[in-house]
Image 1 (cartoon, rainbow, N blue to C red):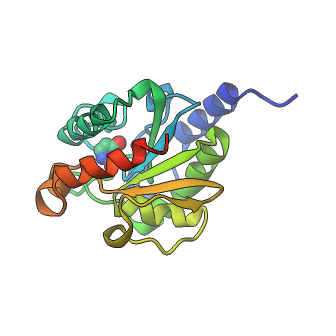
Image 2: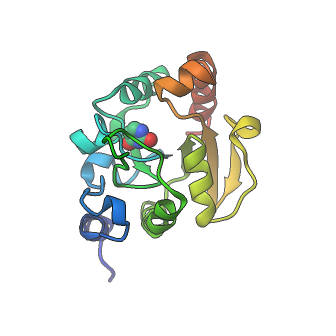
Length: 196
Ligand code: URA
């Protein structure tokens, strides 16, 4: 008999914690533990990278910063609890600028982390994956190619990698203020709730 899902997950967490592949992230610790959520989620969310004030500090994705507050509001709007979901990121370590501000992960960093993302999806095997933002939507192409673009496909469920994928906007204050208002994100979460 093979190892149980929790044991395989614990082993993946240890491997991620020990990873030093990305030169600029070698002194960071991957955000991957039981704080990411349940191993039997109704939906797995894939976002961008742990934020300085959020997941990198609290070790809990989307917890401790404004993006986390917005994400919680979106979850609450469809009655989905943290106990029912799993959250991870395209890159599991927190990328920073020279002045220690959050920065977007590089293509190389996303590529380096994609083997972890693949193992997570294959192990947890969620029926539905929701990407949050264009970095995540691009990053999952490493698992199975797609031609989706957030501007055209946000909120539209599609078949992908043997399950349903729903591309969503990222709940950061910048995206909500500059690109897509909260009303649009609430509508897209409403569509997600019809699937789970
Ligand atoms: N932003 C992200 O993209 N991921 C997190 O985990 C937190 C904030």
